[in-house]
Amino acid sequence: MHWPKKCSWGRHLVPRMLTAGAIKRGLTCLERFKQLIDSTAPAKIRVVGTNALRRAKNRQDFIEPAEQILGCLSM
Image (cartoon, rainbow, N blue to C red; front, side, top):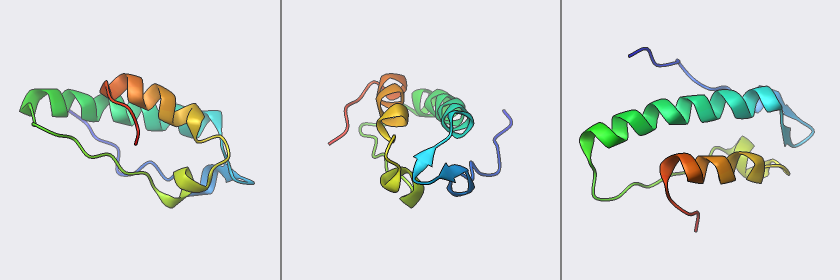
C-alpha cells in the first residue's frame, strides 16, 4: 500500500478555512488509515487534529465525514 508523505493542510488554510481539495485529500488519507486500523483490530482508537484543523472555521466539513469513516464520534 502506498502512503502519502504528509497531507500538508496548513498551506491550504485560506483565511482559516480548509479548501475542498485539502478536505478530500485528508479524507482519502483517513480511509487508507482505516484499512490499516481494521487489519490490526485495536481495542481503542485516539484521533487528534492538527492546528490547521483546530483553527479552521469549516472544520466540521472534515470532522463529520471523518467520524463516519472511522465509525466514531468526536468528544
